[in-house]
Each structure stands twice: as C-alpha cells, then as structure tokens.
Image (cartoon, rainbow, N blue to C red; front, side):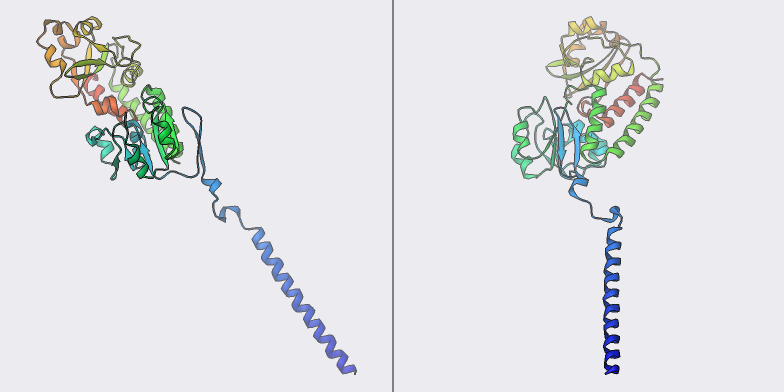
Length: 321
C-alpha cells in the first residue's frame, strides 16, 4: 500500500510539472507577441491615404495614385520631374506640342484629345485613379470627370509663376512624392538664380506674343509668360488687364517694346505681313534687331519647372551678357 501511495504521488507531481511548463510556454509566446515592434506589422490602408488641398477644397485619395491623367501640359511637366508617367494626356492630339525634354521621359501614353474638349469615354477606359484638371478650362467637364476618378483641381490656365510653384507642391503631395518635389524645387531655384545672374540688364520693355496668320496676341504680365518676365525684372509694355490682348500693328507701335519674343503657330504669320509696312520699322525691337523666335510649346504651353527653365535659358541667350 505504501508503495502504491508513493507511485501515485510521483505521477501527480510529474503532471503538475508538465502543466506548469505548458503555461510558461504560453506566457512566453504572448509576451513575444505583445512586444513585437509596430514597425514590423503590415501597413494599413490608413497609412497610405493621401490628403491634400487643391483649388476647391480637400482631396482624399485612398492610396498613392498610379494611373494618372493630366489635362494640361504644365501638369505633365510636373509629373515628369517627379518621375511619374501619366497614362493619359490631353495633348490636343499632337505629341509635338510636348517639350522634347518632357516627351523623352514619357513612356507610352494615350492621348485623350483636346484640352478644351477631352474624350470622356477614352479617359474612362484608362481607369485612372487620379485626373488633374484646370478649374477654369475644364469647368464644364468636371462633373463627368468626377464620376470617373478623384480629381485634383488646380488654377493653371490663369496662373502666374508664383501660383505654378504652389501647384507643383500640391501635385507632388497628391502623387506621394512630396520629398522629391521639395528637392526638385530647390534645384529649380538654384538654376533660376544662376540664369538670373546671366541676365544683368532687365531695364527693358519686353513683350512675348503668339503670332498666327490672322493675329498678334500679346502676353501681358497677367499671363503666365508675361508674369515670368516680370518676375525677372522686365517691364510689360502693354499694361493690359487681359492676359492675351490682340494688338494691331498700330497698337504695337504705340506700346513700342524694346525686345520681342515671338511664338509662331505657323511658318508664315502676321509679323511677316507687317514687315513690309513702314510702321514696323518704328518699333524699337525691330530697329535694334531684338526680335527673337522661340517655341510656343516651351514658352506658353508647358507652364511648369522645365518650361520655365527653358524660358530663362532662352532669355539669357538672347538678352544676357
């Protein structure tokens, strides 16, 4: 009997010991799970959500957009500098309107038609997760576009140089490239300061203008190009509240620019017709041989960092020392 009691007691103690080990093992496992660093846990959807302010309010994107459609050349300019390739671009059905430096950095993209009348069905077929639009130019299309994807609405068409820089920051945040955007803006500022030093004499009346066979369209300092020249220190000779006033030859003689930067649309434009008119010779820019031909896509269409740097380079080459 005594031997049986001892055996029973021994079995009981062994059982208690096994249970204790199991309990300790479970506690250790729980302790390890509880102290796992948060950085090692999978990212949640909340971690990738992007919130940004555009021209009309707050835009919330569930994640970093990957399929972006741009409705203005300036927006494409911005994306390219951030290493982002849009899937669709409103390029007026002409890829030659894109700056060479922009086009060479693009992968295959789909033209979605005119900036003024985009192809809504084609845009929808691209299944974008972000569409960047202008608040003025695209106001009629905004309701339809909003039904396709989230919109980033910016003031581009009526923007001056300062507003462009703000738009750039907004775009960089929206596409999840805020730090890259800050770095590129710093590079832009450095480039601009270097080019400004080459343009020592800015005490000139300088007029940029688009010319086509039917008209001469000045870009006042209310336009993007005109505001850029004003930022560099040049004087706007037209002093007009309209961004793109059409001038007759008589009016051009009256405002009398000392330098002209002409952006031709066709090979033969109205300035060629005016050259045979005696009034043409009365313009200081003509008399002093300071008429320069520049690309419209660089100076007028691509309102962004790349376009602005090209303008500054052209000005430094033409008027710098």
